Every structure is written in C-alpha cells, then in structure tokens.
Image (cartoon, rainbow, N blue to C red; front, side, top):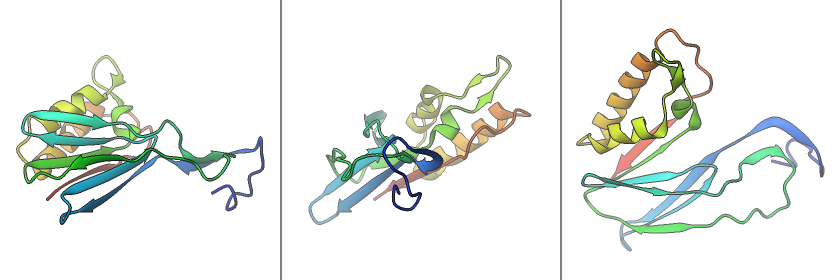
Length: 147
C-alpha cells in the first residue's frame, strides 16, 4: 500500500483498511487467522471466543515492510461458527441516549442465535432499529461462516 499511495517515511493518507484473513484445512481440522485491527470470533455452543488481531492497520501511513502479523490457530469443529465485523457496526450511534451500538450488544446477538444466518439477520435488524434516524458513521461489514 505504501508503494500504491507513494508514501515515504512520515507521510500519511486517508486510505487504508482494517482486515482479517482466515485460512482453513478441513483435512487437518484447523483454521488460521491473522488480523490487521480486526478480530475473529468463534462460537461453540453458547460460548463466543475472541481471537484478537494485531493493533496495526494497512495503509493510512508509512510502515516498514514486511509487517509481522501474529497468526492464531484454532481447531475446526462441526458445531463452530465464525464471525468478523468492522468497527462501523460497533461504533454506530443510536438509541435514545445516542450511544454506540457496541461489541457487547453484537456478541449477545451471536451468542443467542442458533445459526450464522439467524445471527446476521438479527444483528442487521437490531442495528437498523438502533440506528433509526441517526446518520451512518462508517461502512458496515459483517461476515459469518460455518463448516
């Protein structure tokens, strides 16, 4: 990204991204995750486990390369589901008190859902009701999957 935006040491730009990458092997029964200011959430039963990505984003300012990202690993389970979401969802202002939607509220929707489809539908419906007439602050990304 530094080359694309022609960034030199000390330069900055408004362009960049927070993201996560998942790679899996059904044969080995493993999923690997690395995140740039992005986390992965694994739901097994009623428990939701957070795998925290690194606290560095891609772009925005000059960074020395290569950028080392930690890679986390978890075992694949037929009863597991996985979720990633952007801060655009958790930071959305709404409600009577004009507060952010929040990670706790989003994770509650995941925890109380029986499938990925149900979780995503419930989150998007709850977020729309919560946002109401308040202006959208950022892009929204919500991704869920299971095996």
